Length: 239
Image (cartoon, rainbow, N blue to C red; front, side, top):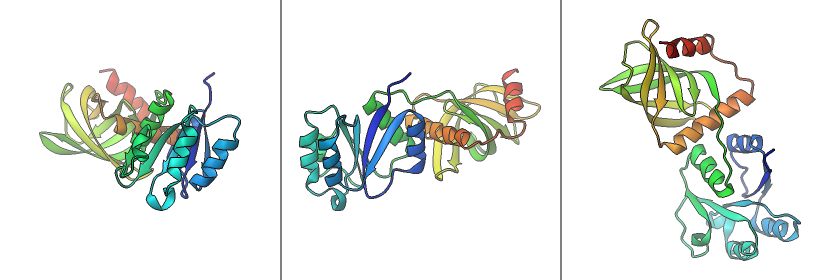
């Protein structure tokens, strides 16, 4: 069984619900405090220290306490991730292990946390959905995503494309209205039903992780497959 990791999140605002739920289901414990002063008190008093401290590094929230927190953590195993709407402007913030500047996606946040914790956060999950999608392949084509996973998806189209085609997809994740654009290759087809299995291109780490969070939370919430989607995927893959 994987060892549980601990995160201390320091911000007057809670961690985004999607990220919080996903991390919790990945055996990661999350404690939240509203200020760096409270974080310092917890770090000083705790018998076991967090593996990762995530700081809201906005000047109004952080002030000079970041220096003190960095000093307190210098002899500990805790790593620090700072979040801000602007690039690090102080020497202190340049010393943290990672820094994310808004706007960053759910996938970028989850990916950075996984790297800092040295934890594999991926899962081979897919979910039936009905998502409008823009497909570019010489022409702009309207499509619908019927199944979605971190590695690819099943598309329903009104006009045919070919196995082996390189395409670009753009669609919106309804959980947080995040717009994703990702390249892919058509790997299977059911030409009678105009159903196509596509594999996402290598790279696009943030986009893949955003999809993974969306699918994980959808399945956790009891989301059911789109009617016929599983059968359609099997049919497309069998050709």
